[in-house]
Image (cartoon, rainbow, N blue to C red):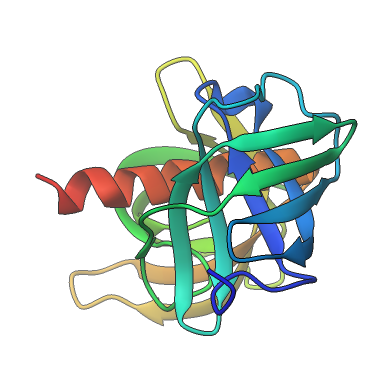
Length: 196
């Protein structure tokens, strides 16, 4: 684990209830565990109860399950996991995501068809001309009741062969918590798709 988790590495921790997702920085690493200094108080994270962990390494996006051996305020000692897997080499896990949504800019609503998504951004199709300089407010559905509110910033617009436009861009978030939720949603869906 020492080669995979290093001091100063940012790590996301997600308990069974993902609403209590948290993130922290690794402050120490040993053969049997590592210490994680959290950004927020560890709500719903309990001793000896498995959580999901996601972190970026030079080998790609690392995913593993483990548990807290000690909890002292925002400082957690995490047991080294028995197994781990790399999800992909990109910084954020990208998944196929087909949804008809709307996004808004300057009091105008634009109908779009999303194609794929990650916590970093998305690719979409639109029959309407999109201003590449626009900041588009959009709600990303991650369940029937839950949405992540963010801003879509177009980076590349191309004319599509079937008509309309294919647009790629990145997300900007009002809170890092929303980014964590979308990161976890994409990573989890990616694992589910691979296991089908």
